Amino acid sequence: MVELKRAKWADWADYIRSLDDPAKNHEKPEALDDIVVLDISSRSMAGCYCSSLLSELGAETIRIEPPGGDLSRTYSPNGMMHQGTGLAYLQEGRNKYHITLNLEKPEGRDILRTLVGNADVLIETYPAGTMDDWGIGYEELSKINPGLIFTSITAFGQFGRESARKQYDYDNVSQARSGIQYGTGEVLPEGKTPAEVPYAVPTKAGPWIAWATSGTFAALGILAALHHRNMTGEGQALDVSTAEAYERFHDYALHWYADQGVLNERFGSLDTALWLYGFYPTKDGGVFLGGLRLEMWQAFVDIIGKWDEWGAGSWTTLAPFMKKDWQLKYQAMIDAETSKYTSGELTRMSIEYAKSGRLAPITPTVAEIVSPWKAMHDENWRDRGMFTPVQDPVYGSVICAQAQWKATETPPRTKWVCRPVGYDNGFVYLKYLGYGPVALKELEAKGVI
Image 1 (cartoon, rainbow, N blue to C red):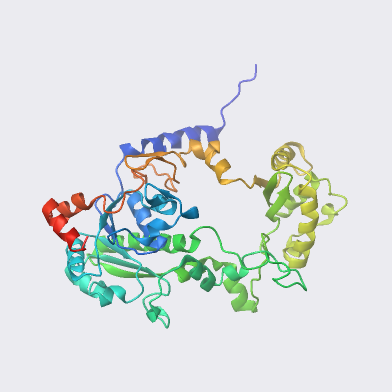
Image 2 (tube, one colour):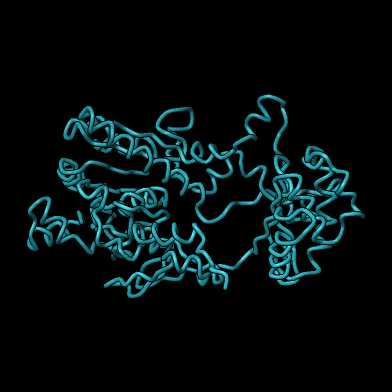
């Protein structure tokens, strides 16, 4: 009888799961549990996203909204609200204490100055100069707290020709101004106009992608600034422009234009830097096909039975397939072939080819394009705890995307989903300012909280 040996990867999987299983996160310390963050971001999910990342790492994050709540609470498909809160805000309200404070009133700004004395980080998304006009900009607040990390996320940055426009930061404005949206979308067929082919126009990326980008870079900058402060005792101001942050993802397109004067035009799901690399239709939806080596592209051609007809055996380099005209030609040919199969059939064909195909074990990558429902029910992500429901005392059982990385010692985590407007006024104002119920009622009557 043959003794079957357990694969090494399986042993590693068991070992690393024992160290970083999200189900055990509550047993471990938090990396930023001694850091206090004030998030006074307004109308922008970039600030909320930034503070979400820090709060997942354990920072005591105090979300400060105007009385009645911030506009970002209303961002939701079809205006749908869950217990008065929009679905987008439910995703980014995690782990934060929520208080109200009217910064348009002098007394409200005085209260913020006091809170800043107890804080490590402040995140704001008002148009450049607004905080300074209110007397609570970096220059003044750094006098109160020299170690403060003052983080501004804006549309055009704190300086530059357009910084004085007083325009709030909009995700789609940043997508458009970054230059990336210009190259995103389907190809406009030669000789056609957008009126004739209305789908062949610049296309926005997924929800809040530019905001998420600037929020992520801001969080990274905050962590670097905290490290610098640990060494020197110095705080600093961080200036993040959402459009600039998103521009970082131009990748090779910047060099292509700078070196060759070539604009990266819209090219659908194809990419002139890679082949085989794109999305293709199937009987029941679509798949992504990847073959970043010549042999993987040849293997795909072999799988669909076109080895001889397309002359795959004579190919010696991928270079010709990087050209737009070649890619468009083969895209049409591939579309006709993949449409004969279901997504599952193509996936299985690739797996079987790796076992016994002409070029085995080489095979192309095939991935089904799945719906959000299917992604949330995917056993791999469920096993990794990505969509484990959070049992929130206010909002009930809520499924939201969990922290995006695992860690063996100080893992990020979601402790609660969100809080209603001003939910933590009593706790926060008593803890940091000593205000009891009577003082809070007086402030509320004056419209300060």
